[in-house]
Amino acid sequence: MKKYFTLLIVGLAISLNSFAQKNEIALVVAPLKFEEQSSYQTMYRRALNEKYVLRAGLRVLVDTDKETRNDTTLSFIAGIIQYDLSVGVQRKLILGDLEKVYLYAGVDGYFNSEFNRKSYETYYGYYWSMGVKPLVGLAYEPLENVRLSFEYRSNFNVNLQDYSAPGENIDRRFTYRPLDQLGLGIGYLF
Image (cartoon, rainbow, N blue to C red; front, top):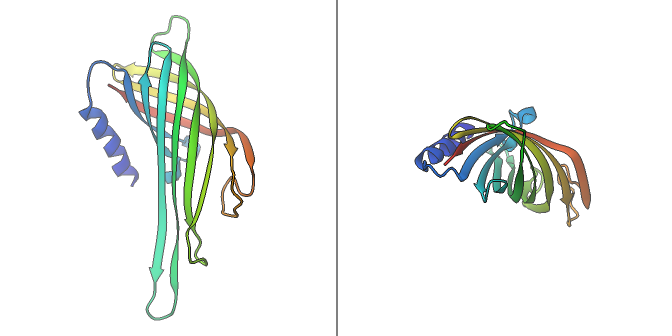
């Protein structure tokens, strides 16, 4: 799944090549959770002017299992389907005379949705939450159409449901995590 997702991003970026370079499509990976599929996010950025950029992100996780045996009455179905949608803005912070390196700060608002089924239940539970993620980052453009970035994100989550599903927001209305994610990104500018 990871290989197909990466090939899709690279193929889309190559096919949309133009010289305006106001757009960026990027793949952001959490390096501390590199082996987990849930650590991958696609990011689209659109430059409004020299300082401000609109951001939109998508993360999808599908992990389902099904096992049925004919010799016994065992039927095992479990899994999780999860997605995050985010929209935000970032501001470019110039570092002196450096043209290819700059800092940025911003905030993303997000909506997280999850379908979860445990092996001993007969239904999928639907859970959702929303919040904001303040972020700071460092970007480097080694080539004309390539941008590398490193982001530090915190997370303020609002959960309006009572549920006992496994996860970070179990039975909590408000959650603040000062270090929610470190993200490494590689983007194509077009």
